[in-house]
Image (cartoon, rainbow, N blue to C red):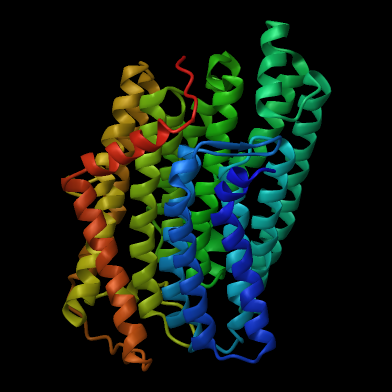
Length: 486
């Protein structure tokens, strides 16, 4: 490995070092506050490292990794999400019964796993990144071990994730057996030589898609989502809904582009079917939910279905639309779960819809931020969610994917119902006595409100002036990521 390759990996080295630093701080018996501040500063160092190495991109680290413009976009979004989640985590865990210090080790390890996925170009690095992410999530989901639903959620995710890993490994083995390569480009070259769709390759792709659909919580592999979202601590739920989905989608895009996945008719049919049933199933399951964490879980199933509509074309417009949609979706969920974190008490999370009745009159800022976040999820104009859905629709229409596009429009109308139901609850009159505001250090409370305001500005800014985000995505994609148009 030469100096330029090592420099390109600098952000990931800093990210890996963060867990080691936290371990040393715990060994030195430092307080939760010191660990939180140190973790935040380490993530800021990752951001600075990414800015420092921008001029050496793209850079391949053979045979496992490639750091290019697409990796920079996805990794940057992951790091931003973890910065925000870290702030929310202090507010949440400072009042909990569990020792929160080891939580940050797991968060940084999970972040490293997701970041490795964004730069993977080989089955070995994909598996390492995915397992590093998954193993961290096993412990994070059940972190509040004195709560029965947390342990149940952790066990459910452990069993199902282990089974999905078996599907993934079996699929990789079949593709390796057929092509003799585990490198994405090597697989692509072998497929071009064969000139047809080998049975082993088709079967391997099908098995790998089972694992990907599980990680993205797509129908029919979604059964874990609602229980895990409900049982996990709110910041962990936020992490699952954003960081883990970004990493898995990033490696899916890279693999699909390398092997020209969308050029295979069977793959388009399977992905279209999964997208359609996810959009329909996710929205229908969310309609009657009274638990906001479960509602957002089913909503996320539908939104990942929307994301697949952008993935289907496999061209530049589809990739750009998917990346923008993932950006809008991530900052929206960060804002929504941030409000849930702020309202959660010591004994239980604020996950029941009744807890939000009259929120606007009690705390206008929280009510306004949650309202904008829900409007963005619904795809209402002047929000980032609207631009994201418009870009996805545009990419689908260009490729004449009429059935997924029509289903997207219809299910978006269905989704509008349950989002507006929550918004109406925020503005309803209430006689409920709410718990007191969190009695934490004013600096951290101010930092958390500041993070929520930043998310609000991003939601509205990306909705009113989307060209800045779209142009940035296009510029990064020009840095070494090869887009194959189908």
